[in-house]
Image (cartoon, rainbow, N blue to C red; front, top):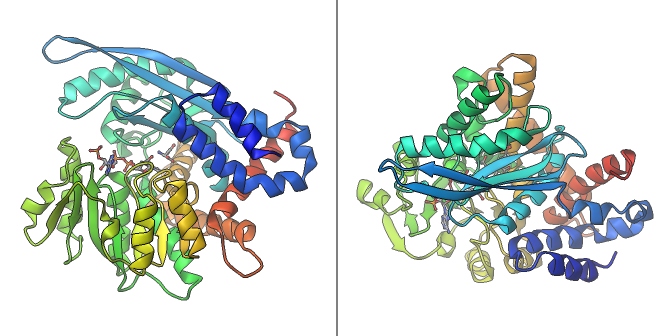
Length: 445
Ligand code: NDP
Ligand code: 2IT
């Protein structure tokens, strides 16, 4: 396999899709050896078939605001690969959303979902809708209009969307209501549903919890744990919230959270009511983290900067893609950070990842360490199929077990002769092999 040649062709076909090209290159570079050792993979055209989505739906989303003004947004669903199960992946509502970002997320989702050990293929979707400053009635009308198109291509055994940035329980509720009305069915077509109508316990916390469980496994390999550790977290959304809860429960101290406006440093630790306040801050739809410093005056707000300049033992980037660059990585390393586990999707740039690997610190890529969210979505699907609901301990136990298994798979495929574990390679090879085998079993389709 010639990675540069494949990437040149992909770039010609998909000009300017930088995030998508970045995600594909990372995977191809990690699986190069394994592909070269198994000529049947190339013979079956697996790579060419894997980097082209099965289909891309792009649609108009017209809606009316509270003043009667008409708006038009763009909606997307990328059905990337369903070799091992129905397409599965979140919906992102954010003004930055475009085809490149959703294709990178859909591509990553194939391998992440494979790692969970559950039968789920890869997909992603969303819209460039900006929820900031919108009323609940406006958000509802937008979600209903979005579903008026999306329902045609999704289904509980076909494609099961969920949340991501800008899509939480509220939006899932509005979309589910419209799907139900259009199809005259009440089925598990979306995950992240409300607890009273098919949702799973622990799903809201799952991505953050899973990320911390994964980091815990990595720390174990060095004979240590979260107790007494200082932890830098970025973002202040769903994933950051779950991570802060679990770190605190395990005896670590979260000292930062961040938003697009800058970061909060709270030397006393972000715990208890301060974690609850994150939910309030997020629900306010304001796009800023600064109000935390008014609410808790012992903390300080650092405008326009990222939390990676703070001295910490462990870093959990939980905001968005490419939010941690090479300089940030070197800051973390020089300040003695021993582990980085990605809660977000692709938050570290390729140069940052290279620095972590060069300095041999523990580094978990998002497709391994944030897989707890989609894994628990998979558990929600199982409960929906059985028409049963598991208790909190049961879901959490399964989530914990899955994260341990993903860690083990990364070690199996990522450990080199010196004993160092390259989790990037481990995750990519392990996720890829299962999908490639399924594609070969099923013929050229
Ligand atoms: P949320 O919408 O709940 O939160 C995203 C957070 O990141 C918000 O606080 C957002 O602020 C902030 N943010 C956005 N851009 C920036 C920026 N440039 N700098 C700092 N902060 C920023 O989304 P989630 O918590 O659900 O998602 C966070 C990440 O985790 C994403 O990468 C997502 O793909 C990933 N993920 C999510 C899963 C889930 O189950 N929800 C599962 C696996 C991964 P604002 O919106 O105000 O810009
Ligand atoms: O990136 C992700 O894995 C998610 N946003 C969760 C997807 C899901 O289907 O639960």
